[in-house]
Image (cartoon, rainbow, N blue to C red):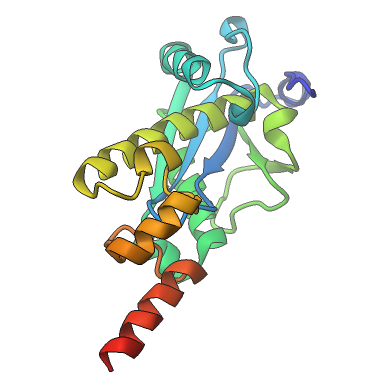
Length: 210
């Protein structure tokens, strides 16, 4: 298992970029809920132990690390709504959430490390994309943890308002239970209508009512 490291950040610091933000998003694949991004600027002297891609951590460890990160690092959170996802597509919405997360940092970073192979087009700061960045850079790993915890909480809150879809456990992802509930209970305002399983159900409903 690849362990993320701090060498990208160290190399940038040696070139004069002292405040480096790692940026990652979570929630591209779900059928419901916003896409969420986090930007994290780590203090090199206070990097928490055990930072890694959020998917490689237990829920308990993720939550503990997220709490620590909010204490010892600078954190910005950004969201793009379901309406924005449906309007501009999930890739652009993910980048919009990233831009908002970076803008939400207390101070602008000198350089941004972005998970993936693309830099958001509206981003004006110096940036480097890193494929599988959450397994390579501790700053991006930190961002993946913060974003995941934040979005899971958003989906838990929405699950209280719209019970029956299992969002408190599936976070809006297309689990078998979620898709069955979608067929049985119908589409909520928090479902992404541009996503095929949701679109198909809406289309079927329209066909029946026509």
